[in-house]
Image 1: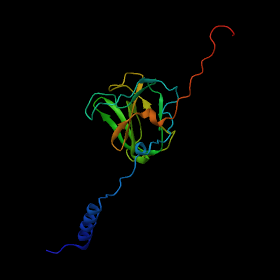
Image 2: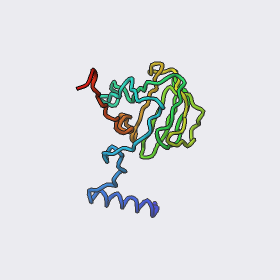
Image 3: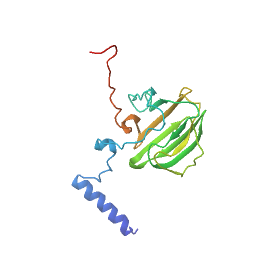
Image 4: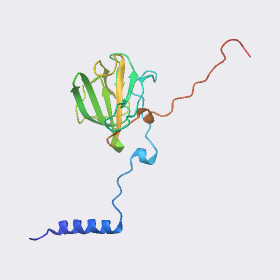
Length: 174
Protein backbone atom coordinates (compact mmCIF):
# COMPACT_ATOMS: atom_id res chain seq x y z
CA UNK A 1 0.00 0.00 0.00
CA UNK A 2 1.39 3.39 -1.01
CA UNK A 3 1.17 6.40 1.29
CA UNK A 4 0.38 9.74 -0.27
CA UNK A 5 3.30 12.21 0.23
CA UNK A 6 1.03 14.75 2.01
CA UNK A 7 -0.23 12.08 4.41
CA UNK A 8 3.33 11.06 5.24
CA UNK A 9 4.36 14.69 5.76
CA UNK A 10 1.35 15.31 8.03
CA UNK A 11 2.19 12.25 10.12
CA UNK A 12 5.82 13.38 10.38
CA UNK A 13 4.73 16.82 11.59
CA UNK A 14 2.53 15.25 14.31
CA UNK A 15 5.45 13.09 15.49
CA UNK A 16 7.78 16.12 15.59
CA UNK A 17 5.22 18.12 17.59
CA UNK A 18 4.68 15.26 20.02
CA UNK A 19 8.41 14.74 20.52
CA UNK A 20 9.04 18.45 21.00
CA UNK A 21 6.24 18.70 23.54
CA UNK A 22 4.59 21.58 21.75
CA UNK A 23 1.36 21.92 19.89
CA UNK A 24 -0.07 24.53 17.60
CA UNK A 25 -1.38 27.38 19.75
CA UNK A 26 -5.09 28.08 19.37
CA UNK A 27 -6.09 31.63 18.55
CA UNK A 28 -6.44 33.64 21.75
CA UNK A 29 -9.97 34.77 22.52
CA UNK A 30 -10.69 38.25 23.90
CA UNK A 31 -11.28 36.59 27.28
CA UNK A 32 -7.82 34.97 27.18
CA UNK A 33 -6.26 38.33 26.38
CA UNK A 34 -8.24 40.09 29.13
CA UNK A 35 -9.73 42.57 26.66
CA UNK A 36 -13.09 42.96 25.00
CA UNK A 37 -14.30 45.16 22.17
CA UNK A 38 -16.58 48.04 23.11
CA UNK A 39 -19.99 47.68 21.54
CA UNK A 40 -22.91 50.07 21.13
CA UNK A 41 -25.94 49.64 23.41
CA UNK A 42 -28.66 47.90 21.33
CA UNK A 43 -31.51 50.23 22.36
CA UNK A 44 -31.90 53.99 22.18
CA UNK A 45 -33.10 53.91 25.76
CA UNK A 46 -31.36 54.15 29.11
CA UNK A 47 -29.33 51.13 30.16
CA UNK A 48 -31.80 49.34 32.38
CA UNK A 49 -31.13 45.67 33.05
CA UNK A 50 -34.28 43.93 34.30
CA UNK A 51 -32.61 40.53 34.87
CA UNK A 52 -28.80 40.30 35.16
CA UNK A 53 -26.46 37.61 33.85
CA UNK A 54 -26.01 34.67 36.25
CA UNK A 55 -23.29 32.21 35.31
CA UNK A 56 -24.24 28.56 35.77
CA UNK A 57 -22.14 26.41 38.10
CA UNK A 58 -21.52 24.00 35.21
CA UNK A 59 -22.41 23.70 31.53
CA UNK A 60 -25.93 22.36 32.15
CA UNK A 61 -26.56 24.14 35.47
CA UNK A 62 -29.20 26.71 36.27
CA UNK A 63 -28.37 30.31 35.47
CA UNK A 64 -29.32 33.17 33.23
CA UNK A 65 -27.10 33.07 30.15
CA UNK A 66 -27.56 36.68 29.13
CA UNK A 67 -29.29 39.82 30.31
CA UNK A 68 -32.88 40.98 29.98
CA UNK A 69 -32.95 44.65 29.04
CA UNK A 70 -35.97 46.78 29.96
CA UNK A 71 -37.59 47.82 26.69
CA UNK A 72 -40.90 48.83 25.21
CA UNK A 73 -42.82 46.44 22.97
CA UNK A 74 -42.14 47.40 19.33
CA UNK A 75 -39.08 49.56 20.07
CA UNK A 76 -36.24 49.36 17.53
CA UNK A 77 -33.19 47.23 18.32
CA UNK A 78 -29.78 48.02 16.82
CA UNK A 79 -26.73 45.87 16.05
CA UNK A 80 -24.17 46.39 18.80
CA UNK A 81 -21.28 45.65 16.40
CA UNK A 82 -20.60 44.64 12.81
CA UNK A 83 -21.42 41.06 11.93
CA UNK A 84 -23.34 38.61 9.79
CA UNK A 85 -26.81 37.29 10.57
CA UNK A 86 -26.45 33.58 11.32
CA UNK A 87 -30.08 32.80 12.13
CA UNK A 88 -33.50 34.43 12.06
CA UNK A 89 -36.60 32.49 12.92
CA UNK A 90 -38.89 31.14 15.60
CA UNK A 91 -37.71 28.77 18.30
CA UNK A 92 -40.64 27.31 20.24
CA UNK A 93 -42.66 30.43 21.08
CA UNK A 94 -40.29 33.30 20.36
CA UNK A 95 -38.68 35.09 17.43
CA UNK A 96 -34.86 35.12 17.53
CA UNK A 97 -32.04 36.77 15.66
CA UNK A 98 -28.43 35.61 15.96
CA UNK A 99 -25.44 37.60 14.70
CA UNK A 100 -21.88 36.30 14.35
CA UNK A 101 -19.26 38.95 15.09
CA UNK A 102 -15.47 38.96 14.70
CA UNK A 103 -13.30 37.25 17.35
CA UNK A 104 -15.73 34.34 17.77
CA UNK A 105 -18.42 36.45 19.46
CA UNK A 106 -22.09 35.59 18.78
CA UNK A 107 -25.14 37.54 19.95
CA UNK A 108 -28.71 36.32 20.22
CA UNK A 109 -31.65 38.66 20.64
CA UNK A 110 -35.07 37.42 21.74
CA UNK A 111 -37.92 38.03 21.30
CA UNK A 112 -37.12 40.08 18.22
CA UNK A 113 -39.05 40.49 14.98
CA UNK A 114 -36.73 41.16 12.05
CA UNK A 115 -36.80 41.27 8.26
CA UNK A 116 -33.13 40.28 8.00
CA UNK A 117 -32.09 36.89 6.63
CA UNK A 118 -29.22 34.54 7.42
CA UNK A 119 -26.15 35.78 5.55
CA UNK A 120 -27.10 39.48 5.69
CA UNK A 121 -24.28 41.78 6.82
CA UNK A 122 -25.08 44.25 9.57
CA UNK A 123 -23.16 47.29 10.77
CA UNK A 124 -22.89 48.62 14.30
CA UNK A 125 -25.87 50.89 14.93
CA UNK A 126 -27.99 49.43 12.11
CA UNK A 127 -31.60 48.63 13.01
CA UNK A 128 -32.00 44.85 13.14
CA UNK A 129 -35.61 44.51 14.31
CA UNK A 130 -38.14 45.39 17.00
CA UNK A 131 -38.87 43.98 20.45
CA UNK A 132 -41.64 41.37 20.46
CA UNK A 133 -43.18 39.14 23.17
CA UNK A 134 -42.49 35.48 23.88
CA UNK A 135 -40.07 33.14 25.54
CA UNK A 136 -38.78 33.57 29.07
CA UNK A 137 -38.25 37.35 28.78
CA UNK A 138 -41.11 39.21 30.42
CA UNK A 139 -43.19 41.47 28.15
CA UNK A 140 -41.39 44.77 27.80
CA UNK A 141 -37.90 43.27 27.87
CA UNK A 142 -35.31 42.04 25.39
CA UNK A 143 -33.05 39.10 26.16
CA UNK A 144 -29.47 39.49 24.92
CA UNK A 145 -27.12 36.51 25.09
CA UNK A 146 -23.46 36.54 24.03
CA UNK A 147 -21.16 33.59 23.42
CA UNK A 148 -17.39 33.74 23.07
CA UNK A 149 -15.94 30.70 21.31
CA UNK A 150 -19.12 28.81 22.22
CA UNK A 151 -19.24 29.72 25.94
CA UNK A 152 -21.76 32.20 27.33
CA UNK A 153 -20.32 35.40 28.80
CA UNK A 154 -21.80 38.39 30.59
CA UNK A 155 -22.90 40.76 27.79
CA UNK A 156 -22.18 43.78 29.98
CA UNK A 157 -18.44 43.10 29.47
CA UNK A 158 -18.88 44.47 25.94
CA UNK A 159 -20.66 47.75 26.56
CA UNK A 160 -17.96 49.73 28.33
CA UNK A 161 -18.20 51.23 31.73
CA UNK A 162 -21.38 52.79 33.05
CA UNK A 163 -20.70 56.41 34.05
CA UNK A 164 -20.55 56.84 37.81
CA UNK A 165 -23.53 58.51 39.42
CA UNK A 166 -22.93 61.93 40.92
CA UNK A 167 -24.87 62.50 44.13
CA UNK A 168 -26.01 66.07 44.59
CA UNK A 169 -26.94 67.72 47.87
CA UNK A 170 -30.53 67.00 48.71
CA UNK A 171 -32.05 69.54 50.92
CA UNK A 172 -30.68 73.04 51.15
CA UNK A 173 -27.22 74.47 50.87
CA UNK A 174 -24.21 73.56 52.97
